[in-house]
Length: 84
Image (cartoon, rainbow, N blue to C red; front, side, top):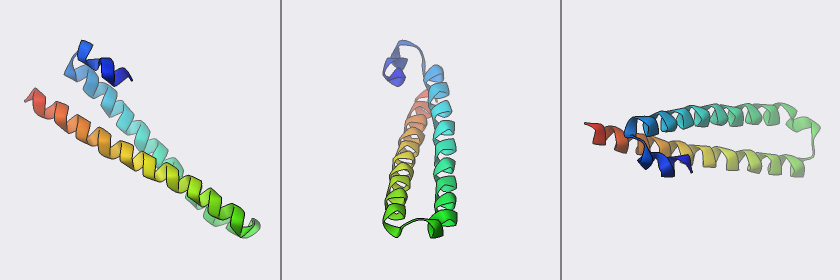
């Protein structure tokens, strides 16, 4: 939402916002890796049916975060190219 109003400021402020968002995406993607490690470690203690749904939830998180990273990288490239 904040990016939608970035046109009221300048590209550098928008780039700062996007770069910050990209860092946040990488942190969140690491959390998904951590969750997968916990699931793999604790899988023997839980019912298989429960674990498959935990894995699906983590998979959703991974896919969404990777999509956000792809978008933010493209958005940054567009704004950086306009600065040149």
